[in-house]
Image (cartoon, rainbow, N blue to C red; front, side):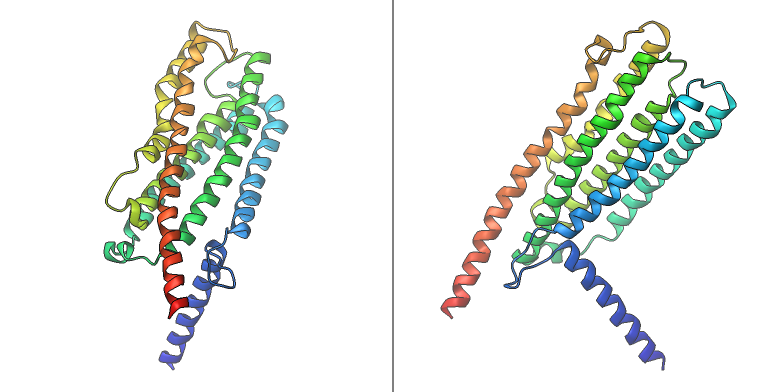
Length: 277
């Protein structure tokens, strides 16, 4: 009886893994990898819904209970949100990094990955980058612009404003979590990056960290001696380092495309050999 139950559990696990694999790494009828459109749409819908709800919260409670840091309502609606999201983001980053690292496959298995499987994973990587590019535009449009507009029409009383809590203490740290997890995943599961470090991807991972010194200077300066909130203000110039870091994504894409070119040649040769046989 125990053997039957164990076999049933094993079968269910294999079935669930098969469904997940078909979503993340779909293949055509001929067995060739396809772009994971369903997974990409799901990521966009989930992420878009999250940012949409967060933006609704900002719009609803910023002007009613977010104008004065020293009011008790601000502590209820905004500081509690700040503490909660910082704890959650820290846990996601630390626990997620440990899980990705300790669940890494055997190095020999990675080195001998089948070309078709590797191509499927690259399709998934391209899908993630496409979704990430959409979310970057959303963050720039919904949170960064909102922060500039907020400071131009309200008085900055402390560093913790509703727009800062959404931008500097949620969106950017969340993106940093995603990039770090992706960095570990790529370097432990992709043959082309197993024994080397992708410098462009390192630049992308460093991008959120590069703005931290300027963020501190910006908040200190605006609080004590610099009232101007225009984007072109000198105290904001250091924020471009994050954009420069994100430019490293172009280099990582070129690295991926170079490997895809090799893999497609290998798959083509294998297909020709099978046809000849």
